[in-house]
Every structure is written in structure tokens, then in C-alpha cells.
Image (tube, rainbow, N blue to C red; front, top):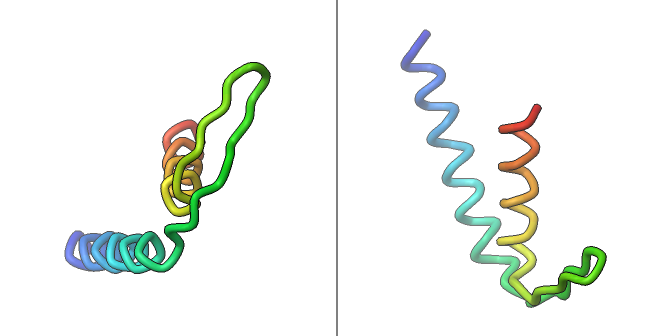
Length: 55
């Protein structure tokens, strides 16, 4: 069972890297008075990570 979960985690990590390499377009993120311009992949991966952690 642990091997299957490790393999699944590895596949998700590989997919995340491929996604990040293909989506490097900078986007502007605004929240109240805060704003930042980062790559789309970074914004989406951070959003996904926070969602997993808080979920």
C-alpha cells in the first residue's frame, strides 16, 4: 500500500513540474491592497497546496 501511495505522489509531482514548465505566463494577483505579479503556475500550485493543507 505504501508503494502505491509513493508512486501516486511521484506521479503528481511529475505532473506538477510539467504543468509549471508549460504555464510560465506572468499574471497579476490582487487581494485588497496587496498585489503581486507571478507566474500562473506558481499561483495555481500555491493555491492547490494551501487548499490541500487546510482541507
